[in-house]
Amino acid sequence: MDNNLINMNNDIIDDAPKVLSGGTEEDYLFADIKKGSLLEDEAANQLNYFTCRNCKTTFVTKMSTNTCVFCNSNDVMKISGQTNNLYYIPFSKTVDDAINDYKKKIRFRFLLPSVFTSKESIKSIKKVYLPFLLRDCNTNGKVIFYAADQNKVNKQIETKKYEVCYDVNFDFKNLSVSRFSKIENNAVLSYEYNSLTLFDNNVFNDSCGIIDDLDENAVINNMNNQINNSVISMVRDGITHQLKKLKNNGVVLNNVVDKRVLLPVFLNVINYKNTDYIYIMNGQTGESNLMYKISPIKLVIVSIITILIIFFIVFLVASII
View 1 (cartoon, rainbow, N blue to C red):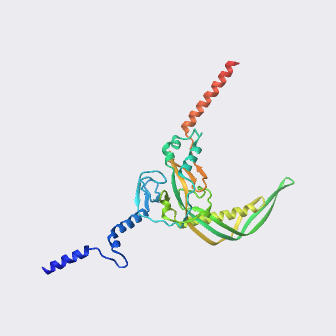
View 2: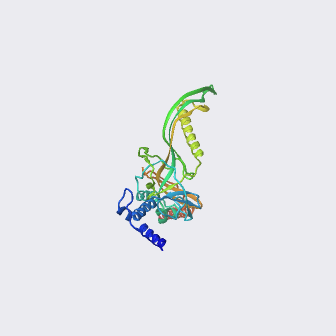
View 3: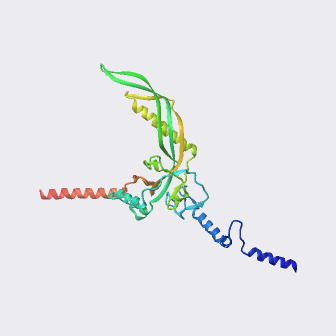
């Protein structure tokens, strides 16, 4: 009997409001409500990761979606994931800007297949962040070229050969290489990198971020090759001889600073006869590119109409004469 009373008293005490250390009775009474608010805040900050079974693209967003950000397939699956970006460039342009730009690009292009001009294609333009590697570095070393000049002397070709040596010391800033295999390095044109901002999950509130699918070593190799090609090209352009061929490249990289960045674009991928044609607009500057295909059927129709018009004009001229 006494034990039962003790248990009852304990139950009552456990359910009674308590004043927590460093708090008030009100803190205790509303503890569950505050805990719920924290959980809601955490959920609002949750990043959702998806992968597309069709094109194998993986992307992240805070929005709920069942459509692939790249190929527009509905065959997407939610997965676990993480981002490894340090910086991003904010959008300066809007979706309306991109839609208007796209409409201008397809206007008066009557030979475009209907899939390019459909309302569905226009509505498919998305606000997307692409993963890139950004690099600042210095290059120095010796570059040696074989060179030659040819002159015609007494109806014979005379060749003078040289060996040209350059001491290279170039600084590179904000070189960019794509970390996503489906987008080429030069696809997004140029950015103003003075607006680089520390990464924040909130960038995905109304946009999607494509997760890099290239191996880190492959990305770095691509970057190194781009720098190497730029150095060789600049040296070659500075050689005034008629013929030139690289003999030795002794250039090394110094003071390398790499940053993982997200670059803003508006993206629309149109699939026509199993080939992807990409519309991409720089989300900061508004520069854009559209890959497109002329419809063979429309081309034939236009050709036939043109021929008929020519015959009709010739017939009218002949009948007048």
